[in-house]
Length: 313
Image 1: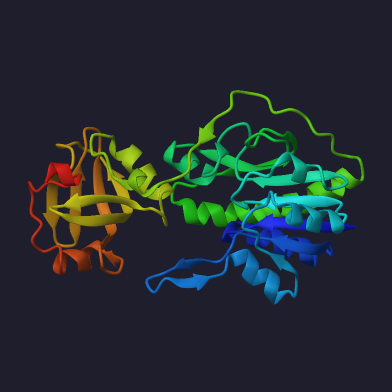
Image 2 (image 1 turned 180 degrees about the vertical axis):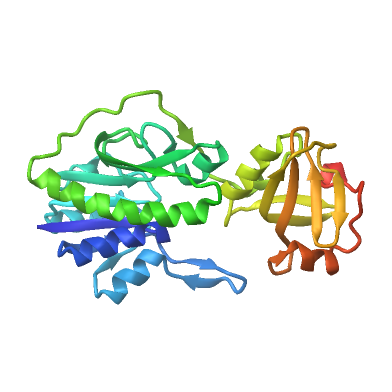
């Protein structure tokens, strides 16, 4: 029977591809409208749209998912399921009632923990050691629906939001197909979420500004969790510097102070632990390893200099 797929970013691509390769009848792919991106502000299709068009699937990009015309279009497909993977909007009640068997959402956390828009990033920022994937039967709430299946995934020490997202997306694709099969066969019984819920707010660029009064470990987690967007950043003078890769080492120092600058080494103080900077990106420049940075535009940085917000410089 027919499936309508809602999804937008790269995270949703493996799920769509797995549905196609498993022989599911994906009759319509709904994704966010094309938006400008990159330095040239070119209009760029979503990753899901690119895959759908490559596979010859019909694509819809409604400005409003509440419009009568769009709702009628969905009803005309007589779908068995609507599958939602990181679409980017909350589905209204009228839309949730359309499919024969219901709307199934693939969410990148072990619900009820980390509900909301940025579960992968906040799991790393929070210092979690484990996360996972949940399939649930959607209701009108924000990730509050009854659970169908869950799969636990370790968060590795070297993971950032990009690498963890890639791994979770592959696990999620497999779990989604397993969920559809088990639900059809009557082997899966939705059950209410149990435990204390946690919520993850939408990330904003300002969330990347480093608070050097935090411990080195907490800053390290933010660097990992905020990569590749918005990236953790600080200021040297009036210039913004993104920290792309760092390492925690023993010691302590004044928050934001350069405690050591050597050949290819830059170490910044925090109240608990030191942060060894490994890879950076100065505004308007390409990412570079710290050695190249210190030999070039960072050569005027010295021990005792301080990094911080603009108000600190």
